[in-house]
Image: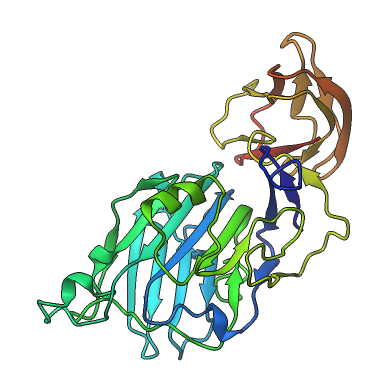
Length: 345
């Protein structure tokens, strides 16, 4: 199951920015097994904005990876167990594995985070080469991870004293949302955009990409998920969505329009949704909820309660003036899980 989620207005032909939902069961995106998506032995940048809805204490949730088999070099980005966080993992053909990790506090659940991972360097010299090591792509100092435009401190493991694994090319798939076809490892949440570069973006470009504006130079793919999976760069390839069980995609607001009540939300917790332009809100969809645990109000006094089950699109058909709050209330503590709703403009 997946959905495209509309959101904040941008300068594109579509009036809203969109994003895509992966249901954590068995669906994922693939760019196929083209060697074009290898990063080689040089610089690279990955930019992606995502909202995770769950993590596992037993297995890593996949964000993306190039390569599945255990006997090849591969590059993996995981949302790992509760003791770690988001990790970039570099594995060579012999199975030697290095990793760079930022903690969960930097990429929290129920929140959109834009992550930029860069590797800089002009060579891949060993750490024993004092002259070349400062500019080597094997040097951890030449990796950076930004979250929402802010450079984050990361921890790393380097199993080879010569430096980080640097050659991770293979002829297998580039996959978003699945770690290794493990049924427990599928990603559950939303992706707003995803882009790949064969160079390290500049500081200015990183800030622009964080805001959703991407340079074309060096792009191996720019995917805005504006109601499709097309590549908006000059490469002009497409991702393929597999195991989609929803025949008719719907569109919903992206940022403010995804309303999440976390696990510890108290009974009668209230969230608000506002938009800078007048909107007609057609429906409220219960993505992760059953029963009548949600109500809405325009004045925080008179409430309309939905009684339909999870997955039902509830008719609202209300006009929301610009910069006016719509109140969403969680009526019961319910089960020990987050509740996720989406508004349909």
